[in-house]
Length: 321
Image 1 (cartoon, rainbow, N blue to C red):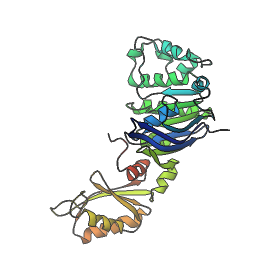
Image 2 (cartoon, rainbow, N blue to C red):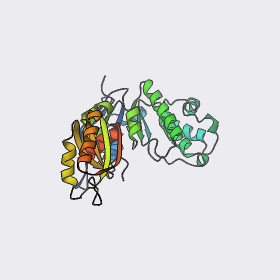
Image 3 (cartoon, rainbow, N blue to C red):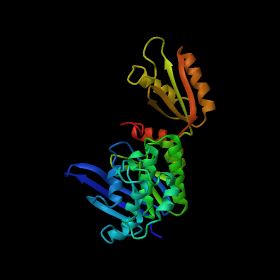
Image 4 (cartoon, rainbow, N blue to C red):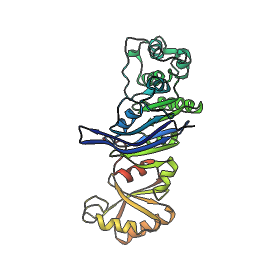
């Protein structure tokens, strides 16, 4: 069976100057939930629009279930359900009318009633779109993608701005689609969402994939399974962890020398140590601070996460503008 989505050496250049995508290759298998993560301007949207057949690449190849967009575009459109980050729908149509409108675009759509029930919108079927809450609007946007009875679901930031309950409702819908054999390509700014939903993911920066694998694999590649975050005062002078302070470079060398430390970075005013054995690192850390006559101002430990992987690879947090 061919891959659900495959692209090879994908490139997109605007005005002959700006390289939005630079040699990107992906292969997404049937039934996978695949995440595409990256900072703003990384090339995610351009990549997705090329995969969806909405934008022509400058060079490279794209195939959907082994077919090219140059071959049978009309049939391929039937295979895709697309939910944008901000889907603009007519506010003077009812929820039912909106879904029926989108169903009319396809040859073999699902029944409107089934989609309303799955998206928990049956009670709002006759309500105007303009009267829906944010969570209900987002579920309706996903409903317009699912009514086509797609094989692949493209979801661009599907839970942005939703409350926790609405987010989990959409997670359940995505999992249900995947359990039925569907393939999902997801972009998100929520790392916990990526960890929970994605079988595999790729981190994109400057138009290229800089890391790819399962969430667990990527976290393991970070070099440590735990993160120790702390800040230290320096008796009236600049904090030892402050970026750019005269102590910063030498202090980081001290932290790197602690037992069990795999890497060190400064993160939002704190020093973050990626470690494998925190029970060895923390006592040694406290000993060094005491020997230097300094004061520990903050100390926390936690499991390493995808956010740590992302920061280490890109130098910034996913939700930074």
